[in-house]
Structures are given as structure tokens and as C-alpha cells.
Image 1 (spheres, rainbow, N blue to C red):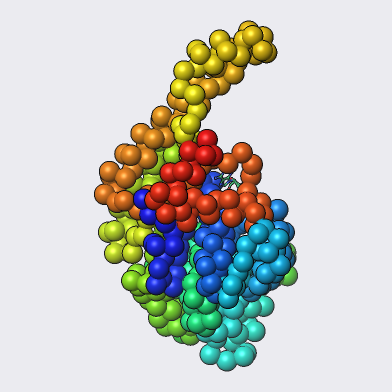
Image 2: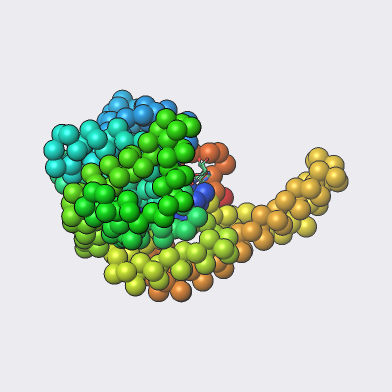
Length: 382
Ligand SMILES: Nc1ncnc2c1ncn2[C@@H]1O[C@H](COP(=O)(O)OP(=O)(O)O)[C@@H](O)[C@H]1O
Ligand SMILES: [Mg+2]
């Protein structure tokens, strides 16, 4: 079994991918904290951290820039950072999009025209996949600044874990798409393709609302057309960064059947897309560990002390837990076989939610354990 420290040795970027709810945000934060505690300068880009976790790391709600997590918090949690640093930020997609526009706009006037355009305001907030794309965009930007040894990226809670892999491509396709091409023709020409009905609708709208939608649309697309090349180039470089040998994708999943199948599928897609797969983290695993294995015996022993009813319920619970643990063990074995990898790291289902550094460090006992350490710890935790 592997340790995250081994998997990420010499890596500059770690992307935690997988379906929502399996613990991606928790795992990314834990990995970042763990690597910082090993002397690295690490930044973690989180997408939707639970409020308690964000608060405990001192992350303000808005910002879109990295903040350093107070080293005193590490000390309180009993960790010596050495020369390491942990920086964290919460991604704000809208702000990131604005930053991209600022960067690509050929001049100040175009920039202001786009940013104040009503269509842009709607679109930038709603563009399908924009959260995925913006996560990549931010990753790329921070990577280019070259201030950290390691960047850890949490990925959005999309239904399909693959959405973000396609994000750079989707954005360029959108920009190159038919609808946009029409508007990007010389002024006026694009407008003519609307039938009479459409232009009448626009003029009625303008009379009723006072908003010249058509003008906004035309202005938006014309201002954007000058930026297509920049976007395309950038999307290409984002893709390059994702595929770089110093990038590592860690697939995070849960031990139930469906999440395991999703992880297998996701792994296959990563390989097909020639993205560097690093390993898989199975989170919230039920361990058999050192539980007594004869529930009947437990019931008999307990009955005298606490009464038959309670003893029976404890024994039932024990049987249920043992069944879950057996199922998890089978699923994890199946996963390792399907992926043909030894890089499978298991993290137990902890008794409590993970909402502060101490909790992250608890997760790290498993993420960063060497083989023999891991076995004893799992046994001790059960
Ligand atoms: N190993 C674990 N044991 C117990 N609770 C966990 C564990 N991992 C994550 N959690 C909790 O599960 C919830 C979802 O985790 P989160 O990281 O936000 O998932 P995701 O980002 O994949 O949607 C959080 O409340 C978190 O504290
Ligand atoms: Mg999350």
C-alpha cells in the first residue's frame, strides 16, 4: 500500500477528482496540510468547503486569493511545520472569469465594455461548466506564478467526475461555436440573420423593458471575438499542465458499489485522455480490524451485565457493521484488481465529521502511513 507522500514525491500539482460527497474537499485539505507538515510550501484550492472547515482554516468567504493558514493552528493541533507553509483559498468562479477577461482584453475599453455588459454578467455566472473551467484556470494561474512546491486542487461537486477534464475543450468549443461565429462577423451582418420575428421581439422587449438586449448581445460577442485566440491558447496550456508528468490525479471514492464503479470508469477515462493517474483514495471505509467476530458470544456475555434486550441490539449492530466491513473489503479488492494498481489508500469512516486541522491530521494518519504503520493504526482504530 502506498502513502500520499510517496505518490506526490516530486509532483507540483495534485488533483483530487471523483464524484461528489465522497470526501474530496476533506481529502484535498488533508493532503495539503500533510505535505505542509513535511516542509513543503503548499497551496490548496478548495471549491465548496464546509463552512466549519473553512472557518477553522481562517478562510474568509470571499476573496479568490490564497491566504496563509496560521502556523499557530498547526502548533495547536500538535504539528511542527518546520519550513512548511499551508496556503488555502476558496474558488470564486465569477471572480476568476473576470480576472481572465481582464487578462485577455486587448485594451481597457474592451475590458470595461465586457465586464459591465449585462449578457456577460449572466453568462459568466451561468456558463455551463464554468466552475470546472475556472478551477482549471485558477490552477494554471497560480502554477504560473511558481510560488509553491505543490498545488492541491479540489474539484467541483459535479454529477460527472469527468466534467472538468473536458472543461478547457468545452470553453473553446463554446467560443468557436456556431452561435458566436454569427455574432463575430462584421457589425451588422450578424444581426441580419435574425428573422423578422426575432428582431421584432427584440424591439418589443426594448420598448417594454428599456433594455436593448440586441445591442448588449452584439457588443458582448464583438468584444469577446478579439479574445478567442487568447482563450484557445490558454485552454491548450491548461490541458498541457493537466497532462504534465509532474501532475498527479488522485481519484477519491467511497467503498460502496456505485462509487467504486465510478472510480473504475474515471480511471479508464484518465488513462484514455493520457492524464497522469497517481492512485486512488477510498474514504469512509468500515474496517473489520479487531472487532470481536462472534456476535452471539458478545450477546451472551453482555446479557448478564446490561439485560437481554440491549445485548441483542448490540449484537445486531455488530453483525451489521461486520457485514459492511466485509462488503467494503470486497469492493476495495475489486477496485485494486480492476485498476491493476497497488496505489490504493484507505481511510476509515471516522466517528466524527472532519472540520479542523486536528481532524485533517487524523485523516493523514492513514493518507501518509507507510505500509506497516498503516496496518497497526487500522487495527488500533477499530
Ligand atoms: N473519513 C471520514 N470520516 C468521517 N467523516 C468524513 C470523512 N471524510 C469526510 N467526512 C465528512 O463527510 C462530509 C463530506 O465531505 P466533503 O469532503 O465535503 O465531500 P466532497 O467534497 O466530496 O463533497 C463532511 O462533512 C466531512 O467532514
Ligand atoms: Mg467538495
